[in-house]
Amino acid sequence: MRELVHEWKDKYSGWDGDIIDLFCEEKDEAVYQWLTEHETWFDDIYPASFSKATCRMATLMLFGENPASSEIIRSLFITCYDNAPDEYGDDECWWSEAMGDIDIDDINLAETIKENVYLYLEDTLRTVIQEIHDREYRYEI
Image (spheres, rainbow, N blue to C red):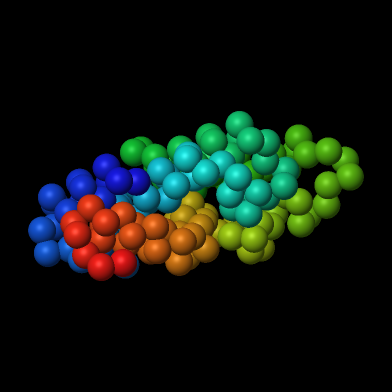
C-alpha cells in the first residue's frame, strides 16, 4: 500500500492522504492490493460458495488492471452456484457481508459489486492509507 500512496502523492501533489478524494481507478487499486495482501477478508467479501482460488480470481476480475464485464462476473457467480455443495442454500451462493444480496440479473453487476465492496472496506482503507500518508510525509497521526 505504501507504494500506492507514493504514486498517488506524485500524481496529485496536493493530495492530503484521504482516499475519498481519489478517482475510482485509484480506489480499485487500493481494494485490489488490500484483498491480495489480506485474503482473510475474502470470507466477508465473497459468498461462501467461492473457494479461496475463486476469490483470488474474482478480485483480479473485478479490481485488476483489466476489469471483466458484468456478463463474465455473472458467469463466475452462476458457475459457483452450480458447483456449490448440495447443502448450500441461496445465502451461501448469492449473499456476502460486503455485497449483501446479489441480484444476478443486475445489468451493471460488476460495478454494483465493486461499489459495495469498496464501501465495505472504505473505513479500513481510509485509516490505513491516511496513516501511511501521514507517516511518509511527516504529518501528525
